[in-house]
Image (tube, rainbow, N blue to C red):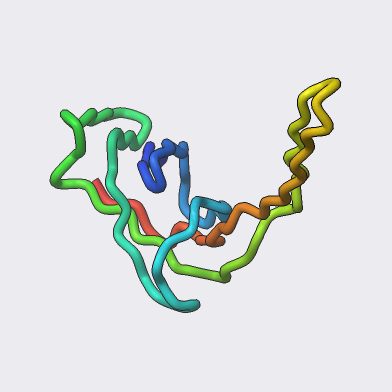
Length: 102
């Protein structure tokens, strides 16, 4: 059984016991979350939502919070002595898919 869920403006194809790093969610470690289900399939039957499947449920558990690797954003304009350097670390939340129900 698999499902396509949406969180943080992105879509993920998940099965049970998958571990994902998604965009930062406001949840503490150990919390259970219900994710929006766009499509769910058990191999024989597939149900697609418009936009979400109201009868399906995907439960995820928060494993941790963190930040990604630093990227350097460097902008300059040639011959103008104009330079800016900026760093960025994208925050993420690590979740584990606990159960998928149709």
